[in-house]
Amino acid sequence: MQKNKKALVLLNMGGARNKAELKMFLTNMFNDKNILTMKSNLLRKLIATFIVTSRLDSAWKNYEKIGNESPINKLTEKLVQKANEKIEDFMTYQVMRYTPPFAKNVIEQMKKDEITEVILLPLYSQYSTTTTKSSLEDFIYFAKDNFKIQIIETFYKNDSFNECILDEIISKIQSPSEYNLIFSAHGLPQKIVDAGDPYEKQMNEHVKILSDKLSQKGINFKSINLAYQSKVGPLKWLEPSLENMLKNFKNENVLIYPIAFIVDNSETDFELDIEYREIAHEIGIKDYKVCKCVNDSDEFIEAIKDIIK
Figure 1: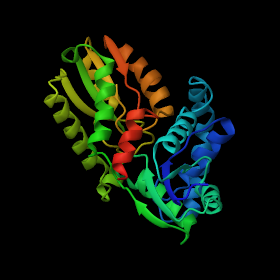
Figure 2: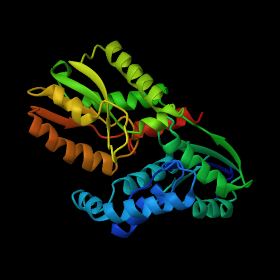
Figure 3: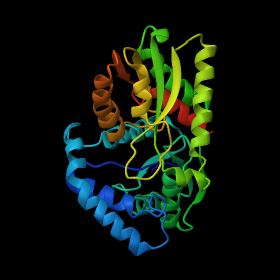
Figure 4: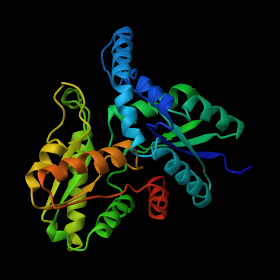
């Protein structure tokens, strides 16, 4: 047992390991008051049930194309293992919001491990009520007063983290001037942003930071863009959509970086690498490449050390 009773807890949304867990994921997500924001719990539950029933089979077909499981689980387990090996003075745990391991169970283990101090690091570098706030509220609700808690709400301005992103972007292509770089972020309904969610503002700031860093390194893409993926339903969502952005680049080359994600998941492996690749092919894009997230890289472990310092 470690002498120092500090914990680093990595928070994320989770991902399905099988069809039953996909149903669990969708049910928990659409019952989250930060996702469906109406005041009536009953109405939320009814809408959630309708969405899950209507979407489960088609959503599972997408998972079948990436090996019947979201990559987020194994990659996060590797990230936690590396963190426990390389980050001194902390025991590292993971907590997922919509699939196991859940906060309630991890907190019970942490109490058995005699943890007294906790740093919560949501694995979303920009803040949103739909991700960061939801994950933090969930952990704090079950933690009660068992720990002294510190929270890291954002880390998109952290230099070490941004260098990890740039390393991946630079490694993907030899001639940046021949490629259009698109930072693809998970979309949000416009009404959530209008209600004060800082996600869009921080996303724009993050793209500016990364663009400036590329320029300082003398790396000049043909263009640098921000677009939003994953829109569902009839509401107005953040724009431009990734699909519409891709239409600008017929007969050109495109490099995608999944700027909203830290660990690869169904949105990166299925949506970006399969679904939007097909769209790019139909549009007539010459070369379409997708970057990996920072995942469990050694460089990201070093960035975490800097972020929690």
